[in-house]
Image (cartoon, rainbow, N blue to C red; front, top):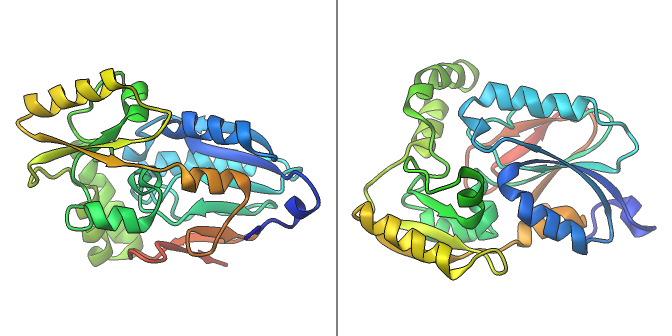
Length: 254
């Protein structure tokens, strides 16, 4: 379903704001898209300071001119970093995802299938390895321990202790599984990198698990195919409101 009216009458013009971990996926999708895209990236792992990342993204939103048909956000909730972001004069579009793991897997269903019982188990991908220059021992999406106390206080004040406990639990890196997961993406991997991951897992005392990922969410985001089940489309003036479930993830708050 095409959700952008401008795209019906010709190419749409989108501003993309995204974590740099999706840079290769977004450039690839942009190369095949009929739409006109201008892209700006934030630094990987900026979500360890949710307030800081939120301010950075909001600043880019606020200075984006209204020549664009929509602003596309290459993030999930990402430790609450996108909670409270407000659309200006241009609509915002964001995947309904807790974090980038869902985006790399291609759907919430795939995330729940493989990580439903261990949502913060360690995983990585070629895109993470490229940006980090190695395999990050804390886990690709985990929060650094020293950041948790201040972060928990912020969450509890805004959303209550029950929701704060849930978010912190989701962000913790856990070691209760006997494997490390590598998310494969067709066209973005090579055998040498996967062999390096196998050695890394073995050195960590774990098995290497390989899952087939998908670019479908990034492709849909860039192409303007924003199905309501998978994307939140926010009209001007509305704000991202977290839901903290595995279904809607977030809603708009006018």
